[in-house]
Structures are given as C-alpha cells and as structure tokens.
Length: 167
Image (cartoon, rainbow, N blue to C red; front, side):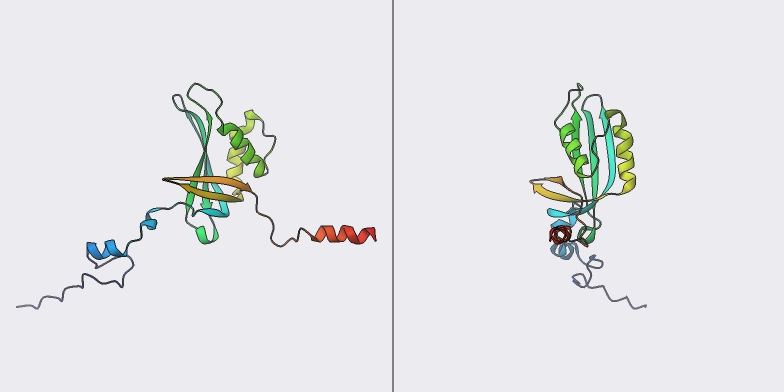
C-alpha cells in the first residue's frame, strides 16, 4: 500500500495570496482596502489617462476624465464626471467646471465645435497634473488643482536677478 502524502498546512500565514490557507485564515489576512483601486485621498500627481464623452438621449451629455496615479499611487485610478447637459439638452453646471479645469490644465479658449477633437488631443499628450482626491461616503471626488510646478526651478530666482539690475 502506497503512503499518502502529508497534508498541507491549512493555516499557514506565510503566503500573502493565501495559497494553501483555509478560508478563515485568508479572511483574517485580508485588508478591506485591497478592494479599492481608487487613488488615495489627498493631493497628488496623476496622469490624465483617458477622456470619454457619453451622449445619452435620456441622461444627457457627460465627460469623464480617468486619472491614473503616479509614484506611490501607481496602479490606482479615479474617474471624474462633468455633466454638461441633462436629457432635455439644458446646460448643466458641469460645463463650467470642465471649462475651468481645462484652463487649469493649460487649455483656454477652446471653441465648442472643437471640444471633442481637443479632448482627444489632450489624452494623447498624457498630461500630468496635481489633483486633490476626496472621499465622501461611497463616492470619490477628484478636483484638478493645476499643472505641477517644476521643482528644479526656484521661483524666487528671477526676482533676485531683477533686484540686482536696479542697483
């Protein structure tokens, strides 16, 4: 009669993936924040990875920005919605917010007829911006803060040169 192989330990805590663990042990090892793939709360750099324009006859028109984290938030994403019109075609507040945020990203004076084309071009540029992520209950809100300041440039440097010229 052949020997049976030794059983695998059921409660091994050596594996992060839980392989070889009982369901109870995996449950105890799991962190609920693993379920979220959202950008963490707070101000951070993110890449504008995608822009979608959704037109629905009953819901209206909305633009969605998909932000992708960089540095510590790499692999995390969050979406931002701008409701441009309601189902009847009436202007919604998101239109002004989109216009403001595009200006913060360096896109001012976009003509309405060029909006969708410009949004496609913006995605191709893979802009990095500073965003502020806020969690409110089950919702995550993303607020554009602007473009990152070049950390290699000292903003006081130009002022010092101007002062020297007056002497």
